[in-house]
Length: 275
Image (cartoon, rainbow, N blue to C red; front, side, top):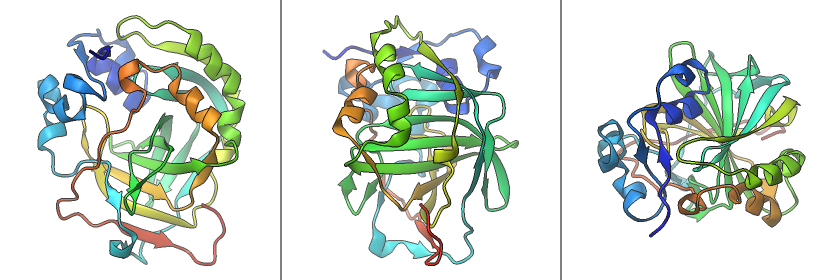
C-alpha cells in the first residue's frame, strides 16, 4: 500500500492562497490525499465533505487543449506580470514543491483586474495537455484578487536545456530533500531575497479558460492562463522536483477533466515576441 499523505484543510488553504491568515487556525479535520490507490484523484471527492466538488463539479481542471478547437478571442489582452524581488521560502508539503513569498511581490493584470502573486509550485508530469500530449513538468503561478478570486498562469516544459530559474534552486532543493516531514507538517528552506524577473516575460500567446484548483478542495471559477511557449527543463531538474515528495505523490498530476461545454480561448499577438 502506498504511503498516505496526511494534511489539514487549513494547511492546503494556506498553500493555495499563500497568505498567513490560515496559519493561525488550528490544524483540524486532518485528511489524507495522494495520487494513487484509495486516496488518488478518483477518490478525492469521497475523502472529506469539503472535497465534494472534486467529484461533482462541472468546471474542473486540468483539461486537454485541442488547438484545432480553441476559439481565438481578439478581445483578450496580453497578460501583464509585474513582479519584484521578495523574501521567499521553499516548501515541501508532501504533494508538491512550492515557493511562498513574504510581503508584496507583484501583480498579474488580466482583463483589467489586478491579481496579487501569492505562490508558485510544480507538477510533474504536467496536468494540462496540448493535443493529448503530456509534458514532463508544469509550473503554476498562483494569484489572488482582493475579491478572493484566483488566476493561475501555467507554463509547460519539455525535456532539453536546464531551466535557469530551477537551476538557481538546485542546492536548496537538495537540502529540502534531506528534510524529514512528519504527518502533515511541512519542510521549509529559507531562500532569502529571490529575483522573479524571469517569471514575468511578455506574453505573446496563451490559452484561457475557467476551471478549478487541481488539488482538493477543487474550488471552481479559477481563471486559467496556459502560456503558449513551452520552456525546457533537464531530466536532473525533474528528479530534483520529485525527490522530496511523498511516494504517493511522486507523479503529482490530476487526470484530464471533461470540458462540459466550456470553450478554451486563444490570445495570440503575431507581432509580439515573448511567451
